[in-house]
Length: 219
Image (cartoon, rainbow, N blue to C red; front, side, top):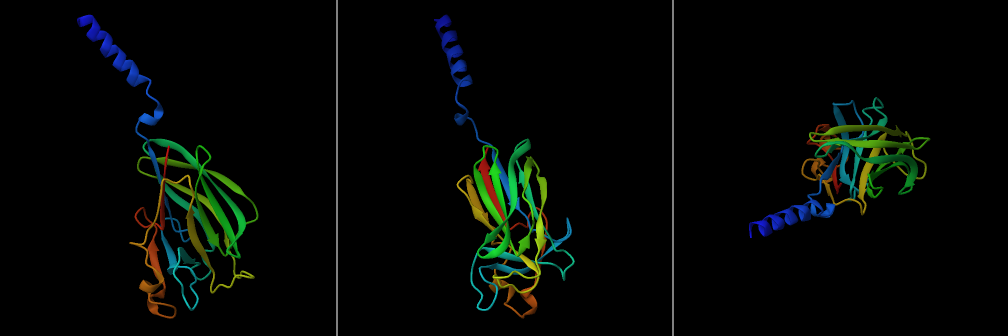
């Protein structure tokens, strides 16, 4: 009887050891997309909250406008803070020039390690001449990922714009397990008051708790 019990215990241990990976707990990569310009560790200038069109008549939408601080900060960056239970490479981002919604733009394609696309991030009224693929890394606290996306244009033929800025928006892809907008910390255009009012120009601190979008996927 004792021998049979020992055999049963050993069989159970072996069964657990050969369980497929899907039965184990799945780790999650959490990527927070940051404001794209301004001094590193400083302030990014939000010139229009969540909107589609920021010209009168203003319309609702999923984009944010970030100003150039009077032409001082015209560089645009892909910035993402990534947390992951461990440390290592969690994906890639591909930055390339495109035409998006009729405007000169940069498309940042975020891919998981298995090649599945998790999200697109667009930077309108922004240009670059080449394509860049950069690895994305994560760690338990967070890993600050930074890649040069492009330069704000002063005019965008065929796509009307007012003032030098980049229009940032993100689009979820099937490879993302969750995707959300930070509508709690970043205001929409109504909250800021409207064009021509003192409240129209707001300032958002670039820190771990101030982010436009959060994207998650399993690894």
